[in-house]
Image (cartoon, rainbow, N blue to C red):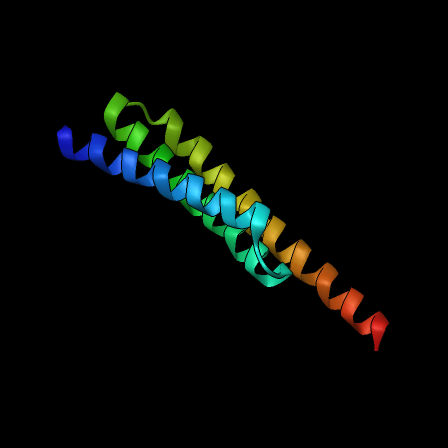
Length: 88
């Protein structure tokens, strides 16, 4: 149980660091990567909460978070590609 709590704390620290990277990133690809990383850390945190509370509802929420993060990353990448094609 202690290992689970320590893992959740490490995940939260990673989430905070990725959020800082999202806000202060030097360029757009770095911010997109930070956005995707926030989704991964969020998913990991929800899986750990599902184990801690022994409730499968958290896994359903994590699955929808992972799906929406994946779709969001694809949409933003397509928009960047369209915008870069307009400039050239």
